[in-house]
Image (cartoon, rainbow, N blue to C red; front, side, top):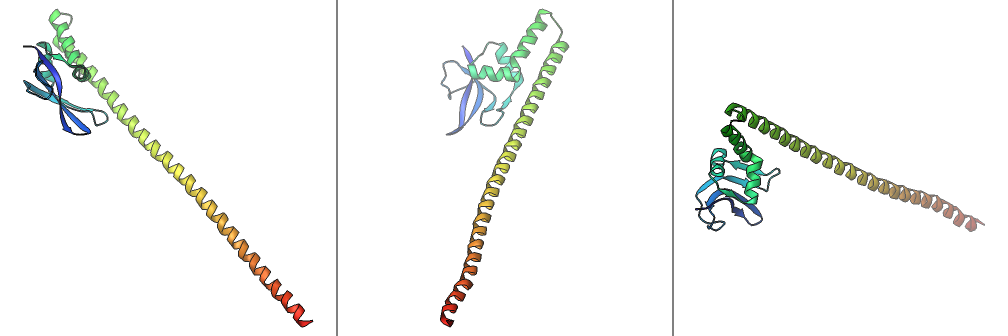
Amino acid sequence: MATKIRLQRGGHKGYAVYRIVVADSRAPRDGRFIEKLGTYNPNTAPSTIDLNFERALYWVEVGAQPTDTARTILRREGVYLMKHLKGGVKKGAFDEATAQQKFDAWKADRQKGLELFLKNAEQAKKDLAAQRLEAEKKVKEAIAKKVAEKNAAAVAEEAAAEEAAPAEETAEEAPAEA
């Protein structure tokens, strides 16, 4: 029986969440499966992956063929690296402790990269909010300037009208006296 490691779709329309499963290669995508290895949520940034590492490594070692997306997930989680390191142990290139040490160093480096990504994403979000706030302040200042100019023009018109009104009254009174 040929086995595949594949994704099984779940979730709802527009928000797909997948189960990572081992299934017979002849079974349909969302059909029967042999074992559930974990879950994959591509809707978060970065994608959330919950994987039973030991079982995934077991199935890869016994020959289960992953689909392209499943292979990418397994590589990202280090299953293929551990398979490679275990092959080196079997060949006698290094011992089990060295293999585990190399894997832990890789995992720590990957974790640092993930933390850096999250930090940069948060900083970019803050910068964008600051830029939007600055743009909003400029718009408000421009509007306030226009309102002030309009009010100043209205005040000037009122002052001119008040000055013109007494002059008209004196002009009307002068001919009446004569």
